[in-house]
Length: 200
Image (tube, rainbow, N blue to C red):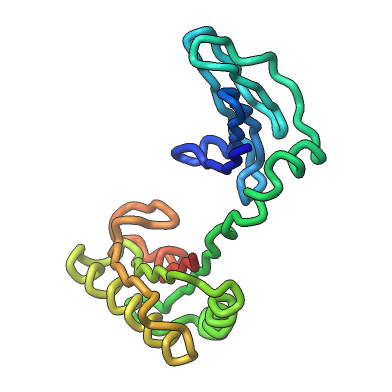
């Protein structure tokens, strides 16, 4: 039996898929954050909607309708998908560091968090680290683009200085164009003055 885990686009649903002898089984499962979306399984013969964690349907072929929705128990999931689930990589870890207004100076709390990010990268043996700089909406687009990049580069240097691997890092700048808290232009919102670090 061939087993796999797939997350559908836009975070709508996580489903487990198994195929054997031309038959497919689809099971709806929570995403890593515990959210349960929904999934529609369609063939030329009909469709079924999976809406609750554990909802399951089986498909015998492209012309046959999906079976009535049933519930997949923990034993079934372990027996059918245990091998695939065992090798599924952990979800990315996200950290947010905040800055004093108009500067590359971390707030005191964020400065203390840098060591924890480095420790987490070693613990999970991160294969990639994304560092993205952001600003609030005070000031010009050009100024904020530069400041966001300087913040991201500053954090990169801190992480490298404490032992994170430089070759695994990608640095980007979003300026004021991607706020965590949407505001009108010209608003000095502290939660937008940030660098996000994502460990993969």
